[in-house]
Image (tube, rainbow, N blue to C red; front, side, top):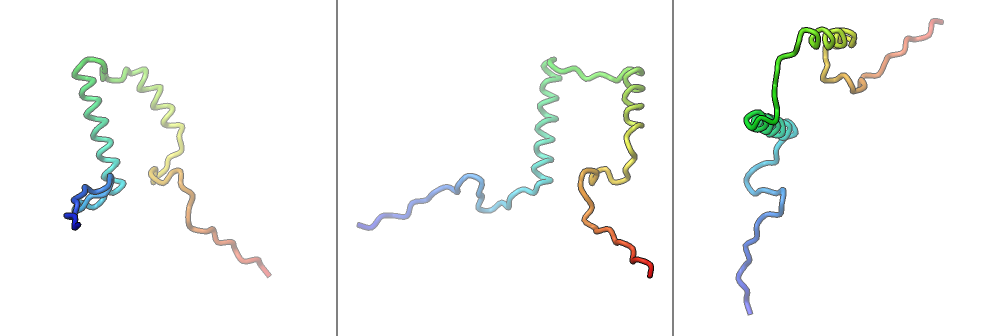
Length: 91
């Protein structure tokens, strides 16, 4: 007997026409979901957002001032890929 072909859905995680999301897109989506959840909590009254007091601002500003200034904060935790060049010995 001849069976007709069976149409199956794509396995989870694989889409036929849409390319996979980039890491940046996934992070943006997660951030948006968190913001929406925070807004829901504010609306239902379980989360209150308030301004910092002058005392809190001063305390956190002094702690922030003690941190080393880094122009490229995004790469703060990554080691440099560039190798240090050792000077040639004097002869």
